[in-house]
Amino acid sequence: MKGKTHSTEEIIRILRQANGGKNAQSVYRMHKLVGKGIAGLGAIIVLSIVVVNPWVGELYQDYIENYRDVMFGYIWWSLGLGMLLIVLGLAAARRERERSTGVAIMAAVLSLVLITDRALLVFFGLSYWVPDPVLGYRHRPDSVRIQGSRLLPSKDHRLQGVRTQINQYGHHDDDFPETKPRGEMRGLMLGDSVTMGHGVDKNGTIASLLEDILSGYERDFVAHQIITLESRVTPLITNMRSSANRWFFPLIS
Image 1 (spheres, rainbow, N blue to C red):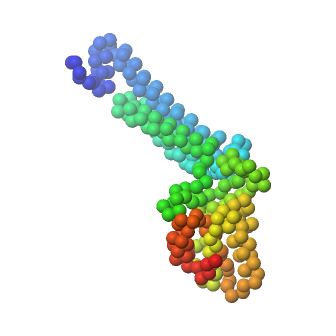
Image 2: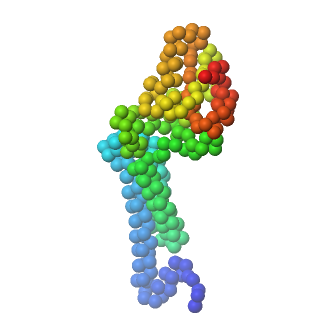
Image 3: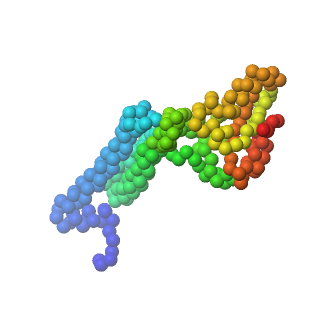
């Protein structure tokens, strides 16, 4: 018997033969207890969205727009992981098998790691920048960030509460279609953070002001789209060419 392993069913059979089944019942109770505990953990994870959501988050975050994206992500992760643990936990409690309990325990450990990671993001938020193969980094697409906050602190009090809206291309602007609509004039502005509009909201950027001026004086086009491309010196030319070809600019300034 030395070195031989036994399944739960074999252990229960041996225990039943040893003392009339009392120890076997203890093993069954252990499986039920562990399974119900895992199901309860899943329920707690699901219920945590009552506290971690963009609406309640306004009570404990300085600017909720900085964290709305990660809070919505937390909701989906908590629902998925929590329901998974509830199902696996109840199945383990009902089947009272070693394999079912083991799978439930493994899922619980992995879920705790994942939900802890999501919870840390809820507190710290996502970075303002993401890696870029050409530029090295760029603004996070489809995001809104508030300057002068805990996530983006600033010593300049004038930046307090300034809203920076980043579109799907990583620009401080509204979204626009990649294909230029008929009758629209597009222009490309190249520059640094000043040209990009750091420290002002979208309507205060140079590109937005230029669009308003062109709409008032330029009648040959039905719409105007001025796109600001913030770039560092090294990849500037490559970025300018790729952007001009991508969005078709008749005017580059």
